[in-house]
Amino acid sequence: MKAAIIGDIHSNLEALQAVIKNIKKRSIKRTFCVGDLVGYGANPNECIELCLKEAHAIVAGNHDYAAVDKTDVRTFNPVAAEAIRWTQNNTKKENLDKLKSLKLSTTVDSILLVHASPIKPEMWNYLFSLEEFEHEFSSFKEKVCFIGHSHIPSAAFQDANGYTDFLRENPFPLIAKRKYIINVGSVGQPRDLDPRASYAIYDGNNNSIEIIRLEYNIPLAQQKIIDAGLPEVLADRLLMGK
Image (cartoon, rainbow, N blue to C red; front, side, top):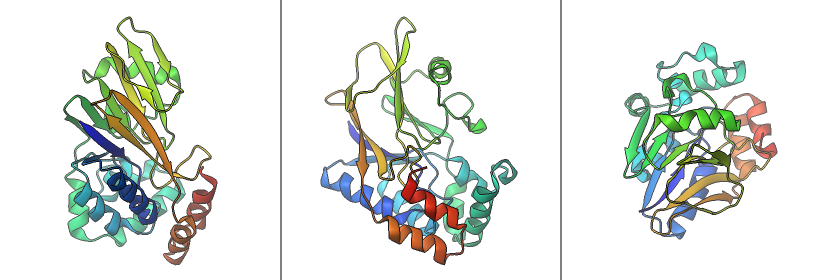
């Protein structure tokens, strides 16, 4: 199986369209999404509908659940909470119903999809340090787990002896008797100081994974945020990648 894994779109239609176009250009037939279709950006309906059209499997992110009152928005920072309230008021009921129906995790063949972490995905825990990644491997049986949430692309493995480390090459091979957790980064709001959209390609035929970065029309996405009356800091951060 060969598949594209996207996530953290955050209502950024320009970034999502660029990523989908690139996936099609590469003739990749399957796309999976690790959540956070909405929040922050100005095109929630279009992003929900495009994801539903293109993705073969989608799991819920914390912003998706907050938009439908399945996660308490009071746990969000003030800017994120304001964006969620805007999203609730500007998203069609049928699209909100789609978000409400999303599950927290799903397995497709030998890969697990979850937004935040495989252990207690409903807690929306972030994985940054090697110790945080290491703690998660015992919670799933699949060879590869794809996540998002932090908006920072990264990859960690654990071998049969329990040795865990980060992977720094890109692309990288999938080695027998190792398990992997891959953060695919963010389509719509990267936070690794690289403003380009991020997604992953899983190639089960050649046993490899690659993180892809793409340019997109950031000024247009920024102007939409400002015109919608969303906090301007959400426009500023797109260009900074933070």
